[in-house]
Length: 394
Image 1 (cartoon, helix red, strand yellow):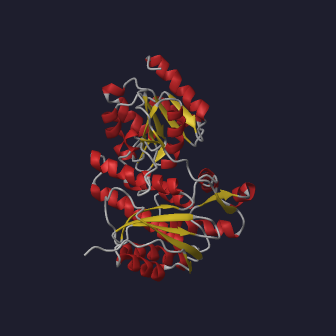
Image 2: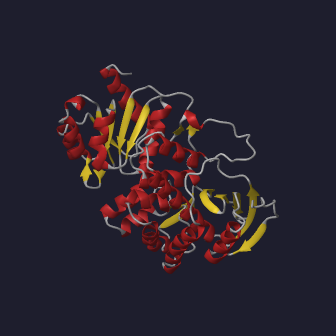
Image 3: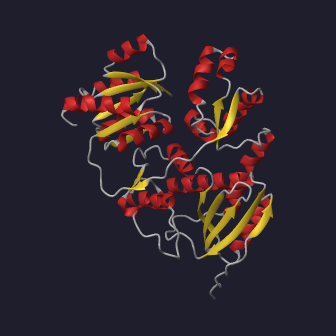
């Protein structure tokens, strides 16, 4: 017996689309084994999300205010071995968007491609899928009213994994309850903290604390971004900001999403530049600067795997962050210089410090240069061109 394909139905308005209502809706889609999209819109903000379903089970979800930031955070957090290519999509994903029976979803397609090529495992892909679904459900729960609409037949062409909606909703609800219990339900994790009164902040905090806050709270990184960068839960990061927000020293502001990757028409064959930094967002900035200039870029967010990865990939130029968990740029530079292949490879150490002693240490461990953060595109490219010309690679 075949199940009838559900017909298009008018949108449904739902107030407080909480966990019980979400569970009820997805259970209703499970019974007829619905395949297609569930599109959710928040009328007040205009934000939209799309859930892809197959036979009543979840495949993936997209949308919200920062879909690209969410993608890059998940890659940095769960797939640190994916070191490059996040600004460009491989040519295998090029195709027509004219197929009315399917909707393109580059994030999901890229996961499928990585699994097929053995770059990641099936289980690793499932972790990314579930993490994405939980974040989307959390964001929707924070919205007071939504409009839901079904689009039968408009699902994903590939079926990587089927996820039970009830389990995912329960996980998102647990996070939402913790958010409410911390009394920060009115704070949005996709907003970015920025120091509103720097002079007053400097007077009321210790010098080292102020320096750290000044570097982190630049208005360019969301609370979720900072949580990944600091290796903490977003709930803890947000809660730590509340005292500063309450006295007006820090403000949460909305920021734009990162640009989505573009289809790579052909392979780049230029020199390979490596960037070792535990912050995926710093690596994103570096990758954008380097790839726009025609070079290839390899980001390494796990400093403990840096020497092994660099030894395998053999980049032509290396940037090392100075301060990282469990190690630092000096130690990595010293280890690399002990490897004969990297005896003459240009190595530049990046840091937020600007001390004479640090520069001396950088030279002693074998670094060619010592650059201060935040890095400028002009300075980064100037150093690359200077040393690659000396090596005959530019």
